[in-house]
Image (cartoon, rainbow, N blue to C red; front, top):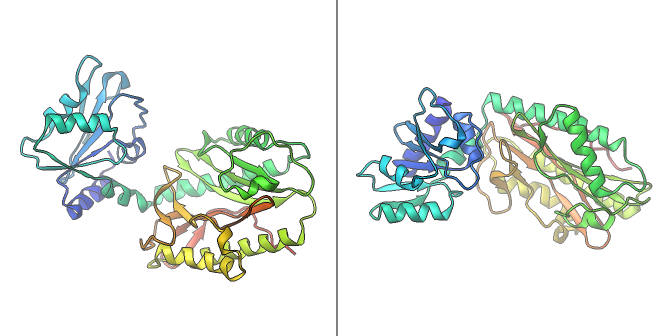
Length: 357
């Protein structure tokens, strides 16, 4: 059990007025316990009280063992797992915070068994703890991002006319695994030409042809640290419009990164990047938020958006990924991960973003 992380969660519980929370998200359980369990349809729950004590509820099939500071309560498939859980909760418990990811059929059964128990969404204490990375997490994210740089650089050297979007995605996975990654942090998003105007295009068997733009949005899983990066390149000579749009996105990326420092709101970082694109008249074609927090999960709260007033703090890691998407023509996105430092930020990606002449 990671005591320092658990203490941060229990402090957050006190701030939220939650004497007890139930954590079911497998990433959050791993964050606190070091145990990675994928329970499928079976119940896995970590119950935490605001005095810093925790207890894990798990099926015997998971073959877990109790750890120091982490009692284990097991059930089997012949038992009502929710009844087991309910029987271990304090009788006088008035309110419990429930993980936003806990399956509703478990929650409804708990409410039926404990009708006097008030339930609230209780993910904030863990989400807020995970938001600030410790030195170990930052080092892992730095290593994951640097490996992602090397993998994408190696992939781009292999690109040839006739390659397909999905084929390059499969090649990225093969290279990442050959260099030591456990796999991808998400399915590689690689698109050509007009498909680049779809921010979340599902890579298909479209072949690459001269004149296409190429978006590589890729990330890998290295020791459960998830990297994420986007680069846009052109296969052949880009048009003047392609050059102009690319330069705008590059400048927006730089402006977003330059705005990152402790005390700055996420919405102001978004504004710094977005203003570059809006000033050039392309505002309607930047259709998504500027970024998202990342760590054990690819998308963690908070996000870097126009409506997020969360303040940047040292240890936060998030993406800066402005883009311009011109339907039927092409698109450009450039993404880096940054970690907030005491006086600014460190950019975790080292793969060059060339200036377009």
